[in-house]
Image (cartoon, rainbow, N blue to C red; front, side):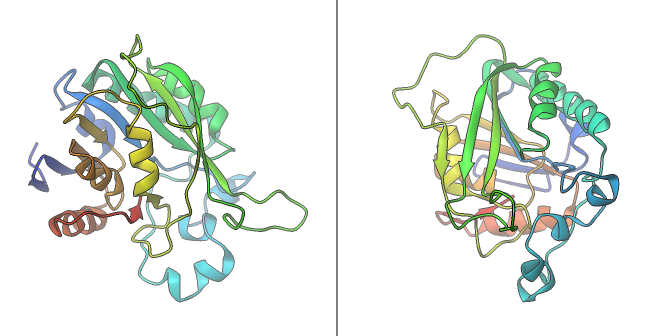
Amino acid sequence: MKPYYEADGITIYHGEACAMLAQLPEASVDVLLTDPPYSSGGMFRSDRSRDPVAKYSSPSWSTGEAAKGYGNFGGDSRDQRVFGLWVAAWSWGALLATRPGGHCFVFSDWRQLPTATDAVQMGGWAWRGIVTWSKGAAGGIPIKGKFRSNAEFVVWATNGAHDQPTAEVPSSVVEVSSVRDREHVTQKPVELLQHLLRVVPGERLTVLDPFMGSGSTLVAARNLGHRCIGIEVEERYCEIAAKRLAQGVLDLGGAA
């Protein structure tokens, strides 16, 4: 595989996740940390088929100045059954690339959480629990008559037996505000990603993100002194991530 970008232990590949995962050496990765397309956004097929910018942001944000220049992304309109099979397929590919005892963190929303937990286990991972990302009391999209959707979730698993524990005991509920100045509509805060990585023992780990978006996982890994492999099917985001990493400064911002 020819890297799109490679420097200081960070490597970006432009390509489809399953195809690229099949080319990684076995047991070469310590951590899978990724935020795949949720294929969520509503109860019906017509809801799921909307553009991600429209689905995952408030009406004022998605139609206003803040949304201009944000690209949509593919693969976000699968039905429930196909979504589960797809997650099982790529998570199995990631498992083969991960060493025994390595960790897995996969983001999900509440609609897809049951399917995501099943699919990760179908991919061969041992499910260890759920981490809740709270966006704070003011986070999420307020809709009258409903609870505020101000939380997302992380499926935590390991490749077989659990590693020796770290000295830290991170909380399974993490309150971090959403990122305001985004490069990607589904951005995750770098601070949140670094929190997840702290449960994994070892130094200079190799972190894998097969749906890297604009590169926050890569930035989080770099900030903690780890190596990272990012895979992204949309070349636009490969370019954004490469430019972000080339800045070579400590980055506490966020992106997908």
